[in-house]
Length: 415
Ligand code: SF4
Image 1 (cartoon, rainbow, N blue to C red):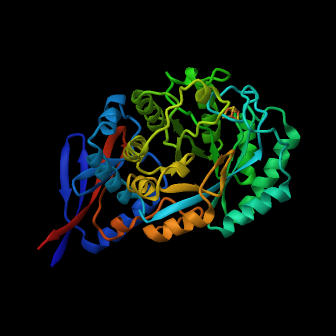
Image 2: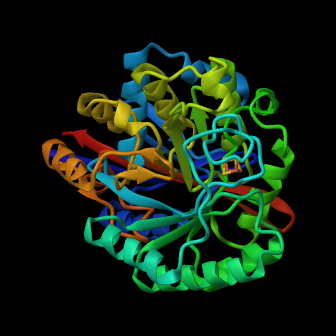
Image 3: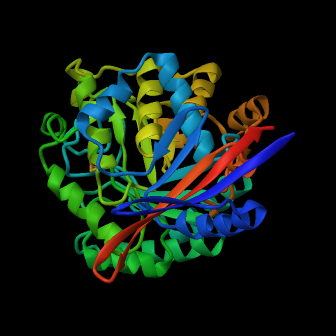
């Protein structure tokens, strides 16, 4: 028979005193306390399971992240998979749909992108889609199981595009009204625009950093890393969830992948969403034509996803572009590594993506369920079954002194 050890530790600067166990009452109190705490991103919560610890923290050093990244592959997978289970239901994978509402004709020079006017690719510029066309696409996506709808426009920034922006605000309102999470990726954004998007009901804004700060100028020269960080900061300040990730296969070194994760994991708050893309090299782009593209394989993707999961445990890690080039078994491995979202629909901006039906069959094969909209963070099954130790610490100011309060909800002990 199992018995439970529940204890509260109150730690003053001068020392530690252990209060008596509270049994089930304490557990109920602690649970509700966690419910509130988990809605705050950086509350200093540590979870442990099977000897593996995970903390939401933003003081990672690059060396620490490199150590995680360089772990033996199977050890890294085990660690990431354990962390995933401590924070999420591993059978739940969100389906998102990305629609290009304005394609091509972009003045930026991103070396991988088929939509830049500077590159001779198959993409023909098209005007912005009409609201009813976008709504029809959102409806189809929702019917196919998607709970997040992302709209992308190919341009450098929203700037003074007032008419286009007003249309987008209407689209955001309408998609939000359908009960879906709604995301936009519209290039650089100022604080006022972010505020208006928030008021219209935007859930998240995507703005990728793509790669490390050091390697970035080899891929893009028309706007800086700092420009991108400023947009991310405007989004955060407006109270919109941040979606920010990168692309593997740009010709970067592993050190650049670690560098990107380091930037993301040391932001004041982790992005709620980190998309990991595998480059789809498109003929006519400099990366494809100059032979610099280096398509990532399953080990590159698995290692990147697993490391992202370990260093940003509460973040949705999204397996994004390039999924079509991975077999079902390889995709399963990426879910084991901690990916908990995919993009569905047969196009991902301008490149091909698995069909809705193929994903439905894959979910059935792997026993995966779609994640409902607006449902994270979850109470993971592993926590509910009391196999996770959750330590919550808060720092209180009292009479000028600082008190750390640490609550520990412990594992079942063998009698
Ligand atoms: S990635 Fe975006 S900003 Fe860069 S060229 Fe393509 S559409 Fe323009």
